[in-house]
Image 1 (cartoon, rainbow, N blue to C red):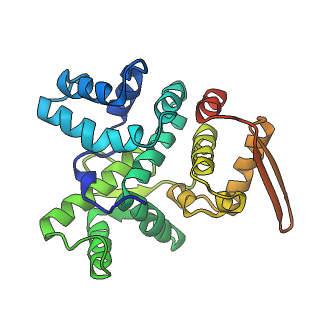
Image 2 (cartoon, helix red, strand yellow; image 1 turned 60 degrees about the vertical axis):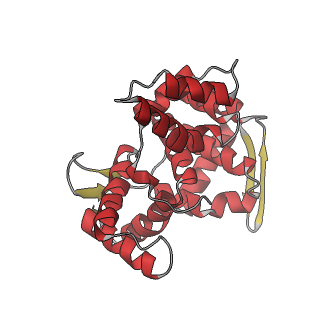
Length: 255
């Protein structure tokens, strides 16, 4: 998992920027040339060249470029399916941002399991302070910690995992759920990362969408019905064989 940082305050979901980024990415150019174009020409239309450089290098690059050459064309294909696009961006963002992943998998998931539906920045701030006492994340100042807490809630709201007014400090936890296209994308990304068949069903990554075992199984069954995987589960035996050869093929099939 990536290093725990406060980068969530520099850019949350940034879904509009992500969409522009993947649509304007030129596959005829190298990664370095593309990144220079976005920063120097401000292709995202950000307020300043400094902001353009910061967003490109510190936020979008770790999410979509460093993850491998298939990610951008796959997410571009998912632009035709907005729910799947959002889920794919959420996965890549939380993969690149360990703090967001931990907050979703541990804090929000646990609160939901406990029956709590309403969360606010004070609750998130308390969670951050308690984790800092355990050694991770760092001991940020009170002001910075509060800003990070608000950033986490804002990002999860934009990714559809929390609900509520954009400027409100309080949010509601959205129920369990992921789009079929988003599930296919994430499942294949986990497969690419070396996750075993059993690990694919039990990874804590699915807690980011509050998915339990039966829901994961249902999604796998739907993938099998689409012909993307061979899925056989009987008792303690389990077999998952992908019939797609690439992430782009998966994305195009489900978009």
